[in-house]
Image (cartoon, rainbow, N blue to C red; front, top):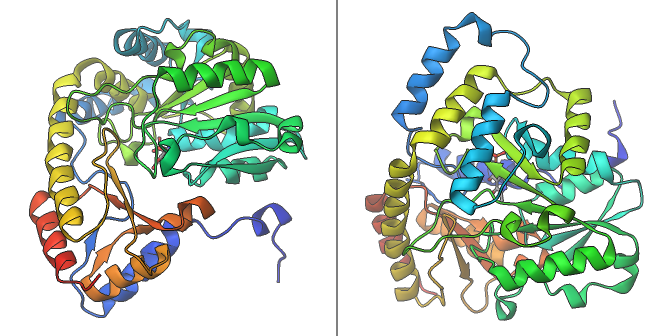
Length: 387
Ligand SMILES: Cc1ncc(COP(=O)(O)O)c(C=O)c1O
C-alpha cells in the first residue's frame, strides 16, 4: 500500500538478515549448524565492564538524557587510550565524539558532508554500511576494487577521473572486513597525500585494530602525518571488548569533521546511555590483559581453520588481524554457490564474498566466532566435501 522512498529501493536487503533467514531455514530441517557467518564475538563482555554498568545503572544521575556528543569523561578516556595505544594526541572535547556504536556514526557521517550527486569512494568488497550511508545522503557510491594482487588495498591511481572530480569522501577500513587485510604506513601516507591533492575527506573505519595475531600491532590512520587535516576515524568497543550488544563507539580526528557529525547526531539521536559510557571507560582503562587473552583465543581458532581450509585445498593466507578468514572458492564455484554448498551439505554458515560487493566474487568469509571444538568439526566436515 505504501511506496518506499527511492533511497531505500536503491539498497539491497541487509546482507546478514538474508543469511540468517537461509540459516534458520536449514536449521528447521534439523541440520546441526556451525555458524561462521556474522562477526559477532561469542565470548561474554569482560566481567569488570559488566560490574561497572551495574554500578552506574543504579545511579539516578545516569538516567537522564545524555550529552549529545557524549560524556566528557568518556571522551577524555578515549583520547587517553588513543595516546597510549597509537601515540596520537586528541583534544577530547573537539576531536572526539561518542557514538551509539560505530555503525551509527558511519551511517550518519555522510549526512553532514555529502550533497546529492556527490561521490563517495568506497572499497569493494566492504562492510555494506559505507555505500548505504552514501545513498541515504543522496550521494553516489563509487567502488574501489580490493584485489589480492594489490594486498586488498585500493589502487588510488585507478579511480576514474570523472568519479574523482565529483568525489567528496574516501572510505578505508583496515584491518579490513571482509578480506582481513592490513594497511601499513606507506599506504596511509599515500591516502593522506591523495586526499590533500583532491580535497577529499578520509573516513577510516578502525573497528578491528585491537584484534591481531603473532605480535602484530595494526596502525591507526591518525598516526600518519597530515591525517588529522583530512580525516576522521571510527572506533568501536564492540569487537575489542565483546560489547556488540551495548552499542558504544567513538569517532576521532579533524575537529570540523567531528563537529559536523555531532551536529547531525544532535538533530537525530540523543546520545549513548551514560551508564554504558561509564562502563566503556572501564573497558578502555582496564581491559588490556583480557584483550590479549581474546586475541590468543582467536589466534588458536585461526590456526585450526586456516590449516583445515588449506588441507581441503583452498589457497588461504592466515590473517594478521581481524577475526575473519577470507578464502578463495574452489575452481568452478561462485561465492554464493560455494556458500550454499557449505550450508546445505555440511551445515557450515559462511558469507559469500559477492555479498560485500562485486569484487568479492570468488571468495567466502568465515568468522572465527565459534570455539575450537566446533571449528575442528567444521574442518572435518569440509574435508569430507568433494571440492
Ligand atoms: C568493518 C566494520 N565497521 C564497523 C562495524 C560496526 O561496529 P559497531 O557498530 O558495533 O561499533 C562493523 C561490525 O561488524 C564492521 O565489521
